[in-house]
Length: 453
Image (cartoon, rainbow, N blue to C red; front, side, top):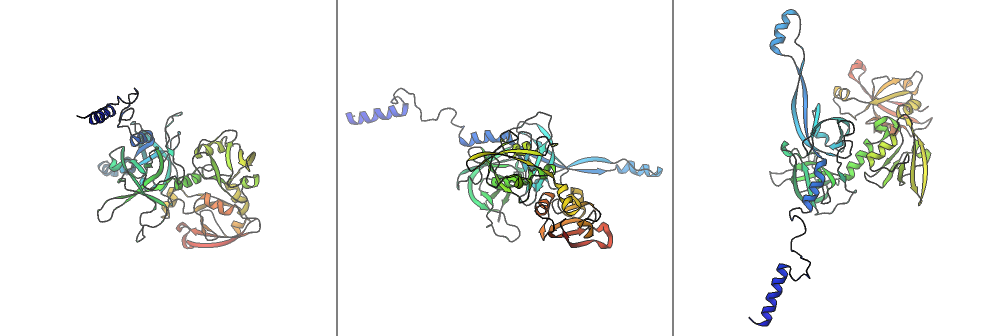
């Protein structure tokens, strides 16, 4: 072996053994466990916020044998209740107080919803609010006082890289916590409805396997942040599955509607924030609202609410309500490079509608909506009508359903108030309403024009 070859061979040995690394003991393997790569660490961070969902339907029945015997005595067997499984799905916890999100279609036909955490704990939930337009529903875990949960981190809106690694977490086929990995295939896709093509720019597309039961679970990036909620899988000719997720931007928009004093407490503020994570910026301020009159403006950054800095959109909502007996809220906002304190006095939503039209309205209950074969959010129901009011002069009655304002769908109470609140005294407003079948021959769709008082 020549001196040149011997030298090359020696350097190869030194590099492979690390002996030539100036005594630092370098290794080709990364520090720690080589298996704990970015994917594993992202899953470890996110999994405690993912829940398995099981839904059941409650059936009432009578024991037929006992019922047959008791009929001889003019009696009926007592009603008994049993729970029948309806389906499974996934969800994601978004706040330490147990608020969680899933798809609205996951809860279809369900009377009870139970969730199982990654540590095996099982809880019942209560429904809060949902939106069929975005297929998102907000639930809250029923837990002992003081119980806190690990919340999922939200990725910033539109912080997406085409081709980046993404991970789908959930409960496929009811098998329990499961993960699949793929890439972000498209930032603007939507599954077809009827003959519609996949060209509507709103949903995310991924090749990570999303199977039945994954719906409602999070789609995360390698930072362990949620970029979307798994919603559907599209298969054609039994080929490779193409999964879809509702992007976090749309989820935040839905939450901005859910977590408002109007929706949750019936108080009119008239301002919304446009992000889930700080910095929280006002994305909308309704003209003529208490917020607008006090000086809040779109684009202002909210630094504090009643003296405390909000940690998230949910925390912002919590601070705004604070003591519900006090409808005064003080905001510290950043405007024109400086800080300004703005105090807003909220007013009850129902009182606003009553002042303008002389009627009180509320959202439809699930049972009321089912009776007219509609979904909650289809209309609002008139509860009371004052004498000599614009509503009475238009011959509106309690029990009528308000379906549209100036030919725009009324929807739920929040949307209705949005449209009615800006009307000024003397304005003429065209209301469309449905008279239910219970009113007999007068049942049907009608419209009337009211003058705001």
